[in-house]
Image 1: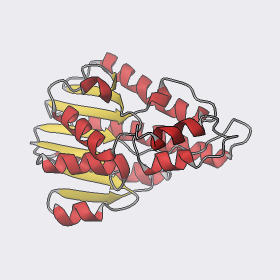
Image 2: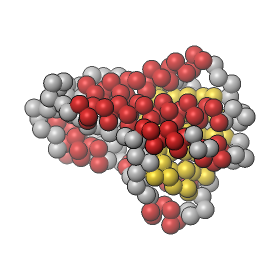
Image 3: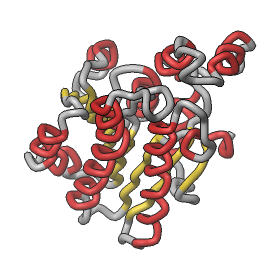
Amino acid sequence: MMHAIVTGHSQGLGNEITRALLKQGVRVMGVSRGSASSLKQTCPEQLQEISLDFSATETVAEWLASGAMQTFFNGCDIALLINNAGVVQPIGAPGTLAGDAVARAVQVNVTVPLMFANQFVAVTNAIGDRRLAHISSGAGRTPYAGWSTYCATKAALDMHARAIALDNIEGLSVVSMAPGIIDTAMQAEIRESEPGRFPKRDQFRQLKADGHLASPEQVGRKLADYCLSTHFGAEPVDDIARWD
C-alpha cells in the first residue's frame, strides 16, 4: 500500500495529481493553505488535509517536528512525497523586485521542499520503497528574462535531486520532474504579466490561443502513473514528456 504526501494539493496540477492518486487507491495527505473540498467530500477517509502557509517557515518547521508525517506513513509499503507547491512571482528583472517577494519565492519554492524532503527521509527509514518527487520546470533548465527568481528556484530543485541521487540512501528514489506547460492559474498569471517585466509574455499567450497547453488533468494522471511505476527515479532530473 502506498501513502503519499502532495503539497499544493488544493488547486491546479497538485489537485489533479491528488485526484489521480486517490483513484488508484493511494492514501493521500494534502498540504496547502486551502482545501480541496470536492476531493475531501468524495474521499473523506482516504484524503487527509493539512493547512500550512509555506511562506511561514517557522510554522512549517513546527509541523514537521510534530510527528504528523511519521504517523501518516506508519503501516505503508511505499512512501511518496511530491513537492508540488510553488509560486512564479516575483516577475521582473533584479532591481525592480520587492525583497520580501524574492524571500517568499525562495521559501515556498526551495526552503520548504528541502525541509519536507529532509523530514521525509528521516521518518521513512524503515520503509523499503521511498519515493521523493520535486515538481520542477523547464524554467529551471532554460533561462528566461524576467524569471531570474523562478528559474533559480527550480534549478535548485534539480540540483537537490542530483545530489541526493549521489548519496545512495537505502530504499530512496528521487526525481525532479518538469511537467511541461500546463493550463493552470499560474499560466494565467504569467499571461497577465507586464511585457516589460516578462518579455516572452506574448509567446505564452500564443501557446494558449493555439491550444498548445496541456490540461492539468492529463498531466496529473501522467505524473501519478509515473510515481506509481517501477521506473520512478530512473533519472534524477527528468521531463514527463519523455514518458508519453
